Image 1 (tube, rainbow, N blue to C red):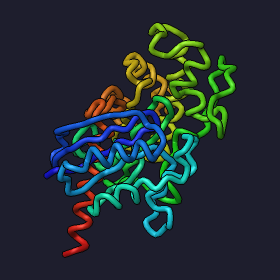
Image 2 (cartoon, helix red, strand yellow; image 1 turned 180 degrees about the vertical axis):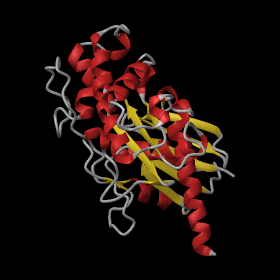
Image 3 (cartoon, rainbow, N blue to C red; image 1 turned 90 degrees about the vertical axis):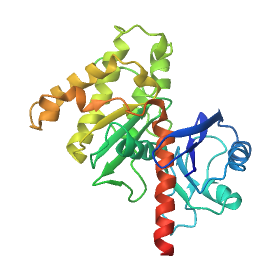
Image 4 (cartoon, rainbow, N blue to C red; image 1 turned 90 degrees about the horizontal axis):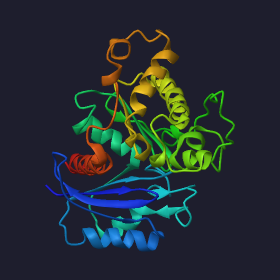
Length: 297
């Protein structure tokens, strides 16, 4: 089985081919430019691949309502040129096959539930902390949708008592993304996070904000696993700092062994590593194919 996969990020597009076991057989990446250029490259990549379905995990916000005239669109994104872009429609004109569609982080969460760190569970929350902050959420085995889709990167958090930074989010200023995304770290400290020492005060501040968000997710959604991916989380020393703060924030209120005794196995990096998003897109394609077959039968 050959399933096409697109991890559509605001910085780069990753396209690939996977099978029903989530094994990536081929992949290519290119910068996210104007939609006409970028989507044409994706179409050209898949043209001779013989895929039976395509899954797309995209940066957002996106329209997931199948009864909406703008289903399959990227909507109010700050990414220049991509506002109201019909991603699914563009692919469907070239490939009349089942197409799965969700946010990039919901896709990554699905990949992790199917083949990664949350395999065998029925709920998880996936954060990506990089150029922006996104959240994917699966509850009772299903990706969470509603009015739109989870946008937990834009929740408000308490401020670190020593932080005077105003925040970088163009919509909310000092929301989680505005305070903890990679560009916010660089704007606050004048250097890219990868250039900061492990004992730099930036990391105590970063772990504070991420622990605030994770604490809220645990209390709101009670996930069986919390997975942290993205470029910022390549700083592996953040994990123990975040875990310690989450335990402190909860203060014994959530009396579950996963938190009180095994927090290092509860808040974890992606089991699929850098492939989480692409594997998740494969899972979206498989799901679309299965739904299509069920509707025919």
